[in-house]
Image (cartoon, rainbow, N blue to C red; front, side, top):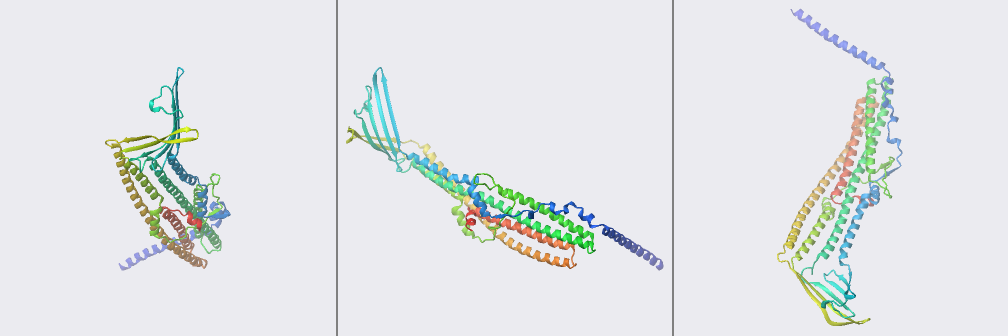
Length: 507
């Protein structure tokens, strides 16, 4: 019985050994067939192998570089939106001129005559010059000459006419503050608001330009890294192919090297697309002196000036934002304009009492005017009994002021939060950039070490590709982080109500 069990076990082991040998023989024949194939059948006939058919940056001759400061300079001089923003203060100046027109001297003349059945009923001539003053009263001077058969007694004057000069003074309402002075004050406030609006529009445009510029810069750097990867992968593929012919590598190794090369060619094409798209996006901001849209040439490369790591003081940024942020200034000027309305409506609650005094001058001779004790004097009283219109206007002004104060507080808080968020983002991205630079440097050390082992025959195509892939990915990630940091800097300046144009131009 024991001999039978031993015989069954021997048959089982023999079966498994036979299967193992058969499987190895199969692999041996398969490997032989693979080696029998020529490299040309695997590689040379592949159309993607022709590197020259794929557009490359090396095919372009970089003529010059373009920095962000230079882009700002061109945009500030010629961009249509900048030109439009520059017209905002000019429009405000015209508003001030319009308001001052309420204080312009005026000349009035009136000539009326009635003739009926060869009888002159009357002839009335009246001319007057009126000079408003910033103090609220008006100076007047005029000449009156009336004649005719049917002339009212109050219109009767000496044959040579009468000259008069006088003054109109408001005694209650409009004495300290009136609608003319309120309109002028508001126009001056709106002029300051227009300057803040101009700064806001320029900062907004420059922020968008900065983001597009750093996208272009990152796309250019990514394209350089992609071409670096292509160059190395092509060199390695040629080396592996040549070594395969001498039997050093298997055919599967040439396929792996080819796949890596093809993969990097695809990445380079994508990088080239991104470069062209970002270049055209930035070109959308560039205009010539003649107002013609200009395209940045493909032979122009971006410069990294302005994207370096900087230290920012949070308290200084918050103080600057609180004092000079254009949105806050606009809100504050709007509040000042509402306070002017409130003051005007406050004085409108008083009764209106106007005094008019005009001394009368008799022309005795053509070159002599005699001053007498004759005059015209008047008082005008206007006083609504319930003052509902005036009280409603005053209360509405108070409510609007309160609303504006709430808006101002809300805007201040949002700006403060925005500055702090941007400050945190800038600092953290700066740390990430430094760490990623070290990571990329270490990845290069690993890649170079693996390359040495590969050349000594102690590594594989897979491992060297893996090391190199990690190194290229590390560089690409570094480029993206540098782009994010540069954009975060622009965002911090924008949140603080500033732009980089002045600082970069001075640098």
